[in-house]
Length: 430
Image (cartoon, rainbow, N blue to C red; front, side, top):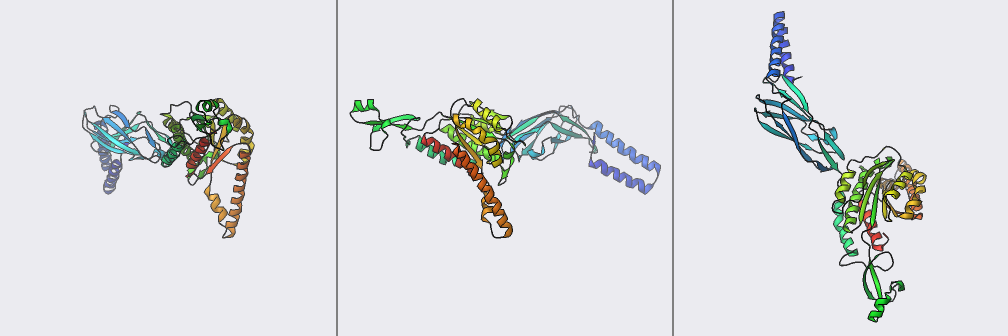
């Protein structure tokens, strides 16, 4: 049972009448009338338990977009339904409106629609629907809930999609009508052509030269069907925000662009997310659905407030990546974390794979380093210069160990990583 605001207003009016008359019979009469009206509402209100509630609508939505979910109520009883319907959504789902008024005749059916505008990734769930069935006086209502669950998975947005056409055009220059031909081992054979001064003599095809009576050399093209493993570091450093965007979200956006490009190039892409334990894993997904699989797997990921176990991460990479390929690790270039945990684990990774580290750079450091127009600005600039120097030292240490480092602000990281992948592809080093 639930009392409404109208019941409170009626009680206030009755109290004024009692105060004006100031007799016991008046008090009893006012209370009797009010209780009788409340009892009549409860008796004449349509049963909540007898209602049939179903739900329908979107089950997925991109972060920044909206999803529509409807609640359908059928009234099989013999009394009209005057109800308030409230779907139980968590606050981050930002459902609007939060409550609906619904009137149904006996045997009638109606639907109410809510629009969700989530502000965070992940699973947005509604365990049920609460319904209040009001009586004819509107003083009291029957209240009950129906356990009709619904969930909407909010997927990471693919904001870097705008770069895809440009990157695909460059990819076609490598492996299309304007194929970039290479010489040397480790790439796929493309065709034969006549020898010119400067060609590597190891590329000469002596059998073809004997058949044609001229010196012929083999040309090559970037290899296809290579293996790429994307590793998302979901430790505490991935929770940091740069330009209002969490590092983990920027890494996801770059992952989607790299995956879309690599799939078009004919490469196989796998994904793991790890901090101290495995958070997500997508292995061997078909090329036609790999992007959707990655998006669904990354949607519920959140940064763990613990330090990443670099040794366990390296062991996991070596376990899932049994063939040589490109390993792209998204992590932060935190000097203490890199030196204490990651550097000792790089030897085994770099020995069996080509290793690339992608990191989000903070443009605020460059702004602080350039602002020296006041005493406070000079102190800020000194701190920024020190931080930039430490990161540059870490980058140098990584490159000495054969690790390629791609560092850029969140809005430029996807494009920079795609360019690095294409450069590796063009050189035939993948």
